[in-house]
Amino acid sequence: MNKKNQLAKNTIIILFGKVSTRFISFFLLPLYTAYLSKSEYGIVDLIQTYVLLFVPIITLELEMSIFRYLIDSRDDDNKSDRLISNNFYVLGISLLLFSVLYFIINSFMKFPFPWIIWIDIIVCVLSGNFLQIARGLGKTVDYSISCILTGLTTVISNIILICHFHMQAEGMIISMALANGVCSLYLFLRLKLFKRIHFKLVDYKLLKEMYRYSIPLVPNGISWWIVNVSDRSIIIWIIGASANGLYAISNKFSMIISSLTGIFNLSWSESAALNINSTERDTFFSDIANTVMKLFVSLGAGMLACMPFVFPLMIHPKYQDAYNYIPPLVIATVFNVGICFYSQIYLAKKLSKKVASTTVMGAIINIVINLLFIKQLGLYAAALSTLISYFVMFVYFHFDLKKHVNIQYDKLLLFRSILIFAFIIWIYYSHNIYLYVFGFIITVLYSIASNYQFLLGSYHTIKNKIKK
Image (cartoon, rainbow, N blue to C red):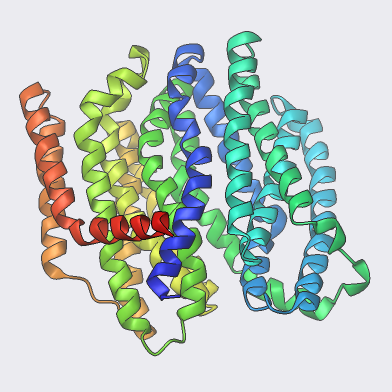
């Protein structure tokens, strides 16, 4: 199959699954903002943030290693079983050690909802690991179905626990744990992992090799956590939980782009690994880079053009101030698209240390800007620190990667991207309904013109598939 068609096919399959999970939290915003106070929402957001911090520390990013190595052994069931068996062996030990440490620390610090948070962390680790196994085995349909089940479980459990039982913050955390638990159980049974686990296949030499790939990604994972969400800790520490609730709502809109980036990234990581040594690599990668830029710049500008109409419908008036911080976060997320794109090329070349060191740099920039300016600028400092750190990382990755892969951007495309964002941000803060409508029309026309060839090709591909 043509390389671009294979990438498109994998992206579409994953899209159907991931959209149900990633977008559920967005469409649940009316429920969350109506039933939870700004302080409650800010605390839940911080708890989930720390859950995401613990996952790479517990697993030492083993799930990324199992995915990468399974790709190379898809045609060899014996080798795949060895990889999966070794994965489960160390995963079990890691979860046991974490559980002991967690409850020892909890006896001194007294976490809120300690048992629920513990279960949430465990199932997050398991679901993340099983999802990467599914991808590594090429089971993208099963991957997507598990994501759909996660989304459905999230909706149903949130409605029951928050609306009916009025559990507020506790209900939201339980819903997260239930959703990840359903995902884990489905994949464990569907992939028949119980038949592929043979502890006699444990190979310490293989484990050493797998960890040599994954361990450099641990500081990368932690640094991504710092870049993405250290803002929350600093906001709660300096400004308060209510301010973090506002900031969390602002982030929910930019997370739509992050979610789509993640969906593309899942299929792109596989394509990058499969084509990293291709003779047509530079042309193929440059073509994808320009296509991705056109799509996500249009998406970011389109989101800001829609926001004056969408925000009042989705968000309770008590969260109104969150509207002001959305533009820098959206633009930051567009830069993050490029960062993720470059990161997967580094990982495909097994240069995980480079990704980690660059992300650490971004994390330091993020923290320094927050600490220096958050008292003066408030939540604007948090949003701008994210934007600046992402911009620096994107620029560094672009020039450093030229040592390995020569990716060329269309200069006219770069100029148009800057122009459309400057135009739409001016309109965003104008608070003028006529300008809102004008900006929306211009953005739609720009998006269609920029992505015409892609949209036309997608239409013909879908049309041909339906005929078949």
